[in-house]
Image 1 (cartoon, rainbow, N blue to C red):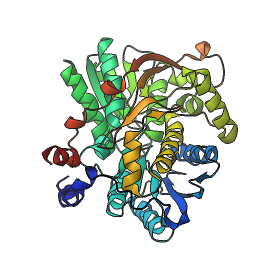
Image 2: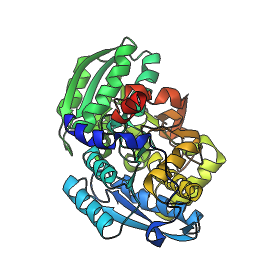
Image 3: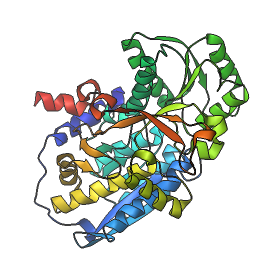
Image 4: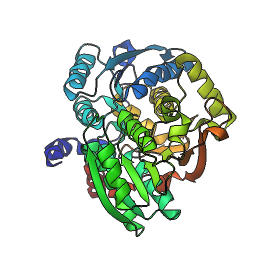
Length: 407
C-alpha cells in the first residue's frame, strides 16, 4: 500500500476543502455516467442487473436532471484491470463522463478509483466488496455504497459467534479480495474470543474444491467460513452438498453470497447457508414490489447489488439537483450532507471516507419446504445496525481522514 502515499498527499486536502459554487451548471450540457461491470465472467449476475437498475433510477428522474439529459454508457471490464482502464480512459477522454459506476472486482475497482480521483470523476462503487476502498485506497471523490468485506464478514462472524460458533476454518480465494474478507472476519472472531483453526486457499475460478472441503471437515471447526465470491462460492456450496457437508455438524457460512444462490443452485443444495446482506425483498411490501418490477424486466430477483446501483444513482442525481452542478467535489459534498432514504436504506449516511453506513441483515437460506414461492428464499435472523455493521472510520486507515484531523 506504500505506493499510494504520494498520490494521497497530493489529494488529501480535497476531502476537507469546501465545495465551490462557482460552476452552478452541467458540464457538456449532459450528465454522463459510465457503468463499468462484469457482463460475462465470474460476477456476471452482478453486471446483468446493474444496467437495468441504473436505468430504473434514471427513468424515475424522467431521463433528465436540472433540465439536462442523463446519459448512461455501459462497458464490460471482464474482471481485467487492463480492459477496465482502457474503458475508463475512453469514457473519460472521448465521452467526458462525470461518474464511474459499479466496478465489481477489487483488482478493477482500486485502479479505477485512483484514476477517477486524478481526473475529478466520481467513483460510485456498488459491487466491489473490499473495505480497502474506504481504507488505504480511499479517495476524496470515492463512494462505497452497498456493502463491504468488513460488514459482510464481521456481521456474519459476530452473529454466528453469538450462537456458539467459536472455532473457524476458512476456505479462502487466493487473491487480495479473499484475504481481506478473511482478515475482516478473523478480526471479529479474535476480539470475541474465538479461534481460527486453519485456512485452505483456492485459486480464482477453481473447478474442484474437494481437497479444501475435506481439509475443513477434518479440522473439527464448528464453522467453515467461505471467504470467496461469485461462481467460486456457488461451486463450493454445491460440492459441499455433494459431500454431505450441508447437513452435518459444521455450519457453512458464506462471507459474500449472492441472493441469487437459491435460484442458480436450488434450495435443497443451498439450504442452511448463513450470510449477511444489505437488502432483502421480504422486509416490506415496498421491497417486494421493487423486486417484482426488477424481475419483470430482467428475469432475475433483485439483490443488494442491483438495488445498490439504483440507490446510489438516485442519490447522485438528487445531489446534482441540490448542488446545481455535476462538478464532482460539489456533488459528493451534497451526497454526504443528504441522508439516504429509499428502497435500499433508511437514514443512511455517507461518511468522509466514502463509506455509506446503513443497516445490514443476517440471513439464512430456507429449506425448500419452508418457501412460499418464487423469491421467498431467505429468513432474516437479525438486524445489524449500521454503526455496528461497518468499520469505525478512525480504524480504517484512510489517509484523507488522518489528514483532516491534523488540519
